[in-house]
Image (cartoon, rainbow over all chains, first blue to last red; front, side, top):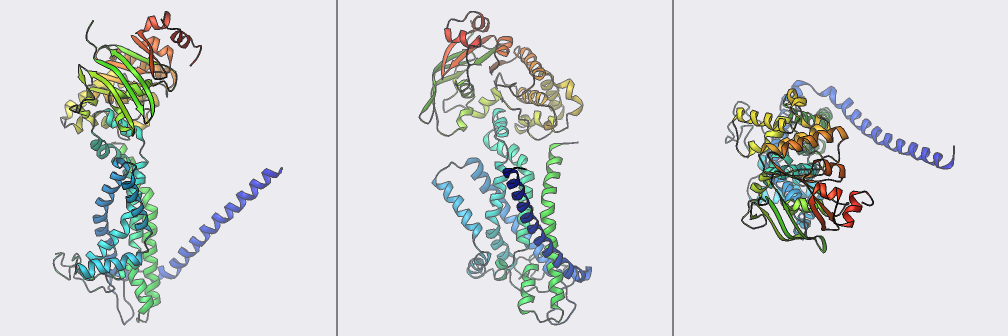
Length: 296
Length: 252
């Protein structure tokens, strides 16, 4: 074996070790969280409300809040992100204006989430007088989510070959029709993967919500789905502690006797949800593509 | 002699400071196949894309001179670009079916234009695919993803897709250069059938192809027309020495 061959083998070995280390750390973390947390998870734990002073509390309301906030935040941010990314990828010329937008998105995406949270507190909670509420939280999450979602969708659009655009134009479709009827559908699998990946991030976010959606989860009346009643689960003006905030809260100031159990159980549920989001992103994207591309 | 269907006069095209086309004058007759030949980078594809304004998409392109389609200047501001490209369809070098079913590919342009009648759409799908000589091969798989077919079939599906919107002129930018000889032959036969109803302008690197199928041939060099004449004359007895060298394979 000559020198370059040896070098190359050593390099590959080292790279494999590094990659293995990364996987090992991840596996250890997830394994630890699941092993300590999952035994505490039961159907009752997932559905019953939290208890502040006594043992046996669940995470039902927090779980519902997390999902509801996620859906609201996505409903608000998706149209904006879609519009922005279509503009950036399809229409924007390469000039100072476009590069200003891009830089703004970059900066927005690297803002620490606690800063976004405090900004949301000042603007939505105080200035707009929404209080600690679902709507404050959803708007703040939108700010937090928008840059990444925009970038993900833009990448998906950029992945569509120019041949497709020319094909549309060459058929006599207008540029707008080509984008809406050909480019966006062709990018849909990527867009959906992007949405799901962003959902995972939003679902696990705590710092941006502590000062906006609040740290309390008042009891909800699950028999009342009128969003204008303050104890309805759908009410956008009620405070809503999410799962991630709940974990932070009970670890920093919880006084219930079983807080370790509740905390590790909640953590396991949170990690499991995010894991499902991430693993399903590719799968669902591929399924959508298959479904879209064959009418069988 | 009939009036030409497309006529380019004094067409100059600049990419920024670089002049890619120099004073092109070319008339194309209806229901004929005209071939544009010449070495790589000679401007033949660039010229082709002027004819349905596909160059408009590229930043920094400046065009002077006129292109008339049925006597109308297609670069005049009143022209509806969408209508223009419906009348002057285009087939590209790489087969570019949309990632949908064959049926959806063919009917897309029509459905977006508002045609909803299923029977009418079915009839157009069958007619277009038959015209593109691919109906027999794929008629049982109309609802399969168009990307699942071979390159040659994909290209004929793309031709059918253009035919479905009933253009009068079809521009083809090296439509067979990515295909094997058998698929190419099928497409050549398709074109010979199509010229009864359509005017075809084709860019090709394949000189045999130009000589087999075209009625007239234009030879481009460095952004200029060297010679434009009946194909037989161009290949047998060209006026220009450069044309003769090129068609006999001495360079290019």
